[in-house]
Length: 292
Image (cartoon, rainbow, N blue to C red; front, side):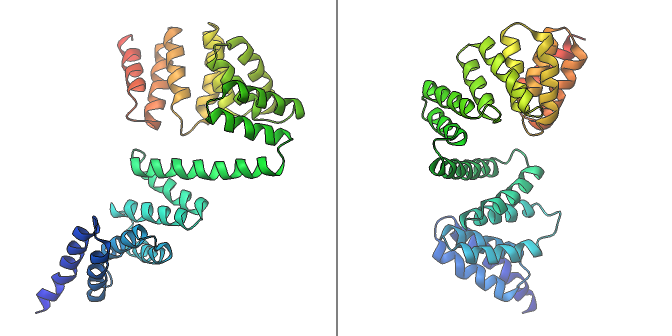
């Protein structure tokens, strides 16, 4: 009899997992019964939390996931699953910063986990849009308001309108950092490399530690055929862009063009350390090593 009861909670958990795919009402009792028989089954708490989340019972889901988080062994692969659903639940409970912090922990351990990447992207986008809209609503006729308006126009595909808004923002406050980088980026996308480089040069004086400003300034130099000038800008951008492989990829390309194979290989390895599945970084590394 003891043996039967020892296995019963696990069977209940498996039953609940099957139901969880689409029949949430049937899943909940199975997991609750498993936990009644063995409260230490953190997997049952996890699945119960997932089911509650999918039924939009976020406060209850959070309680179960907190229990699961305390019970799951630190090195167990299930830790990522618990943290992912806790992050999603916190975001659903209108606590985006806390939720994103939890999701970022998952991504630090599993950078290629697509569902976590997608959730983080959506959450950052929603959070950013809310902040942009709040600023714009409060003070549209201001440097901040025009910058917000520029981002909104750019998102709608109105590049000319966005350029005008960024220029108005700079005209209202020439010391404001941000619009210059956006302006330079859009000018570069229109093929106006020299004009973009001039704008970005001014931006770099305002924000001497902005990776994006360095990156787009370097791309402007590349378009203008100034590879040697682009290299140090990309080195700076790559050293500060810890989560973005693009500056390192561009740097590897520049070093290859300059015939500096060792430096190109090092930059490509740096890009692969950030994005192990990047085909561009891998091809650049192969090209640099083949030419040695």
